[in-house]
Amino acid sequence: MKGLYYKDENIRLYNNDFLTMRSIPENSIDLIVTSPPYNLDIGYKSYNDGVSYEEYLVIFEKWLRKCFKVLKNDGRMCMNIPLDKSKGGYQSVGADLTVLAKKVGLKYKTSIIWNEGNISKGSAWGSWLSASAPHIIAPVELIVVLYKNQWKKESGSRISDIQKEEFKEWTRGMWTFKGESKRKIGHPAPIR
Image 1 (cartoon, rainbow, N blue to C red):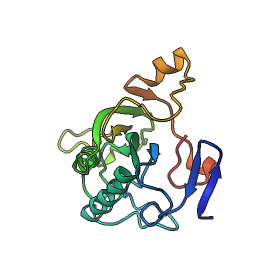
Image 2 (tube, rainbow, N blue to C red):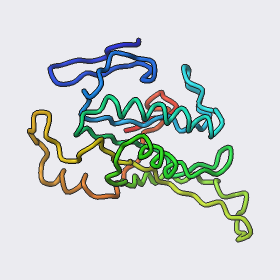
Image 3 (cartoon, rainbow, N blue to C red):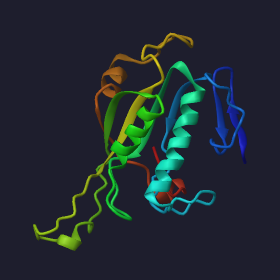
Image 4 (tube, rainbow, N blue to C red):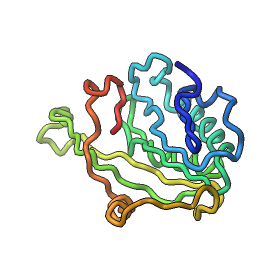
């Protein structure tokens, strides 16, 4: 079901291909929270998640350019992306995508480390107990926090309903909680 998924007086959620949809006006979005495909050849029904890394970066740059256009001047963006990947060759995904975001005009605020704690039990067997070619496991992801032109929010309701303990917990640069199970959610790339 593509199109407008949910709407109330302040929120609109769309289920659509962001690159092809035309219903979001420029300079209209306060916040983009996203976990774009990681290019790990996951079996999505409507997206090829196994393109070359170079093609992935080209697609990602187009996507970031559109994000930049639709964000308000004080709009923000939080991207949940991998730190790196080894499938199909080692790549510094987090660093590469952050550089692309800055290239299209987004400004970097910070990165939050999401410690999922999901370490595969047999992931280092190729070099098990050998220092000759160890496989390094990084059970973390990044949440890169970006903004368009100014960090301080001046648009919107300016109402803050966050509690003191929530504020302290969520403004720390390390978050530790497990991601959801693929089986429980029924999606190849679950988030909590």
